[in-house]
Length: 179
Image (cartoon, rainbow, N blue to C red; front, side):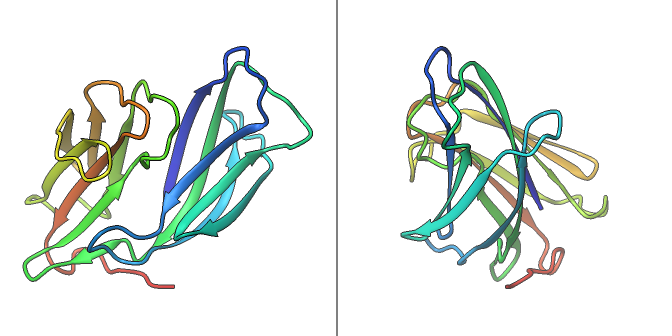
């Protein structure tokens, strides 16, 4: 289950909302299935949204086409992801592009947390990457505290840059769910 918290500053620009594009495939990765369960603001008020898939990218279009907005807005997107765990000969892995690389604006800060099912994992393999798609830059940090693993970019991301997290686990630690 994924919950994204996006704070977007429109400034004085009048817009209807945002698009959140989520790739459903990655190089050597599984084909994801994603079911969006809702989009709200920080007070829990629902936003109008629609979803569509084009070229293996899920687009969540958030906002009312009849209402213009300005200023700082918070978008909390909740969705369930299926088939996200990659299996290798010696470990399972969550390889997740947290932000996507399609944002046409810079991202000032990004943080992500993965909450594991229990505390029994002590040999997790962690890594992270920043920059444009395919980049091996590591302007990020990660830390495990109990069942929570956190990742953060250490500098703003430019247009079309993202943060990708890697979390390796023992084989069979998490059972993949397929849809």
